[in-house]
Length: 441
Image (cartoon, rainbow, N blue to C red; front, side, top):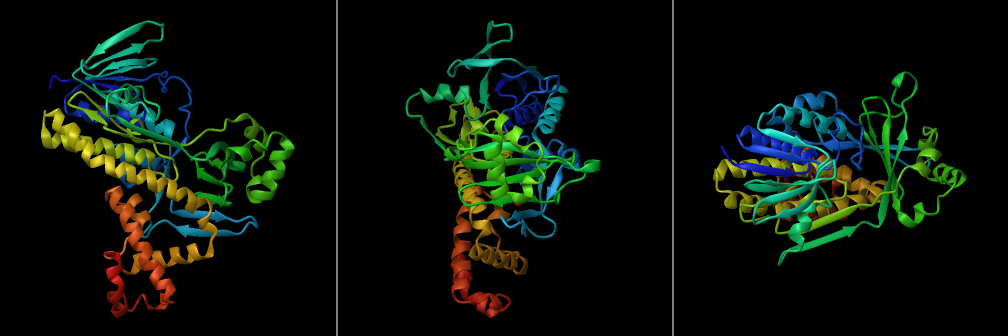
């Protein structure tokens, strides 16, 4: 295979794609604007925890990395809801021990880079910032660490350079390219609950912890070292009111009293750590002929509230690989089919992620919502072949995201019907259920 492919962006998606392509014999040049993270402790500017679930695991399994990554992951079997009066409510994610896995972004990216570096047909280029892309000529220009510029020629280019991609920027100025970005009204700040004595976890380690407060919320994910990475999501104007140690302390004492007792460095961390924004990016087309394709956040940046950002990007890789398998060396067909398969589904997960923010921040503490969740869980247990929750379809299957979005709407009609009739006790009655299954059609 003589084709040369330039991949711009050495994060999770780009590095994984380079490995898939290298295994098929392509010659890959992978460019990353940051230093080699294996040698430098650098920040990706993003959360250090990621939620790895079925779609992402499938992508890692195909390169033999799934078991190794899972060995260092912490399974989270459900949500632990923390109320303002310190009451705890546990909501399981699925059944039969289904879990999402808390993994380290840095460790995962490092292992992918190490694996990529082992291929003779992958060339890694760090400290290389993309400054221009000529789509028709399949060339990309990079500013190197020493300040000089270099032009690289290839047969095609894959843009995996994130939400503010230089590759997409070049496509944006072309005719009939549609682009939108939408910022959520809340920002986020990362904080920490350190490990206790002997690296003991201060809370249940096998749950994603949520402090829902309506207009804002905090979540915490466990780390193997015994600490929790906390993320506070809150409107920017509320962040702006917390400028002193006293103001931060008073706010947390009122809103997150149990967490406050476990955060000895809170005030310093709060005032020091940046407040970042959350953006959804949608665009079209992602591809041009056989020359260029966008993947991952470059094509579809989403907010993090469904834990599917990495999983969706990894699914881009497996779908692209399947298209290569099906269409051989016809890259026009490969890119076209990849786009047709992925665009509707990434639009769907973008919408689901925003929807899940409002569920996590507000509804998880609502009695009607909790009642409906219990009913949903019971139906899933009783009729696993007939009823699957939106969350299960999204997180614990490889079903299209668009199907999960649509099925969730139908599920809600069924659940509300049962509750309105006061018929929760009838769900074990097959005759009753046969009369209402049509609501899922």
